[in-house]
Image (cartoon, rainbow, N blue to C red; front, side, top):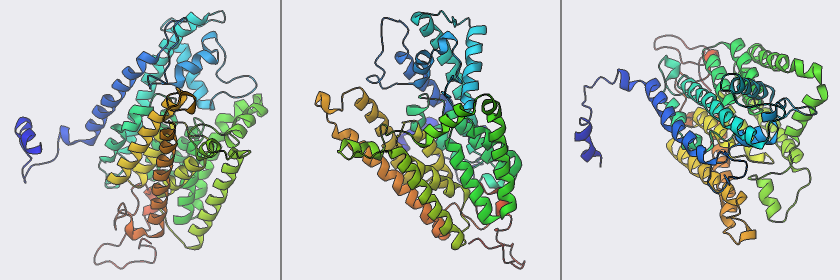
Length: 460
């Protein structure tokens, strides 16, 4: 096939071809790939948008469910209800602000009929405009995230854009789960923060990651990984500088809400920690097998804290100097495996963590296949096609959970092994110990030939 296609596209490149110019620029490829993924993604969701009050849409059967319209209608956002909620936060603070601004644009510029007296049909009409505007915003976030990844991948530390950005821009996982919820917002902010970190800007990185943590809880795990890397490789000053910037930013964004109603903010994060068992988790699979575990959310969080405590103690005692990407993968994948529920959009965080830690063919294929497979299985389960109630092949859903969790554990173990044995970590090189390391790399590069090596110049 290769030889048959070559004449049609100009033939294979010669030995002396200069691989430079417009079409050899990763940034161009990233932009084109994001469009190639997101436009079909948007069009795939159009049939699942309910446009008539009397004609409900089964989005599970059509495999294009999204929280965006469902939340807009069910939470009364089309009738002017505040996305910040009354007794409890409905969304992370930054997402609530984004929803509020999107709704203002929908009503103020596009004349969406958002009023307190709006009936169901008027709310559906408004939700169509809201969904379209949200999709545009999420595409911008996807583009920003993919471009930021070009500054974090292999080769980026040498000042050139990395082709690893294409791994995110062209990921089938984004095509599957990109419009389920608002997760692309914190992902974009988190990667922007890491891009600042890779340039040695600890303060700016902490501020941006702190803002990302106000849009979702997973950036908190990323912030922990970065603080840990700073502490192990550069000492408490770097860890404090980044960590303090993150915490202060997070607190300042929440401050108006805390002053208005502390209990509302507390209840939101308390619920995040103590979630009930939900679809897709190993805890949920155990309940299907007849093993009901009380307070599985609290138990899972406790197990995660124990794992992280042991892991951090091991890193400190053995004087390991792990890459930032490896630490991010360990914490993010452990959080996903032990979580009480597994929304399909969690896969977006996992593909990002994988690209930062182990962007290798086997891992990428395995994660993509199992996550997309689970994405298909969960809608079959919720739609009734894979449940015992309809005599469906319910074992397929169970198998999808097991395979997905198995791959996640495999990647988690691989990342830990990279930390334990740096010589097997293919992303480490003598001159760039960590593509994301930024200032952390300064004391770990090998000395140039002919110059004496200092005690801190050898990567451990």
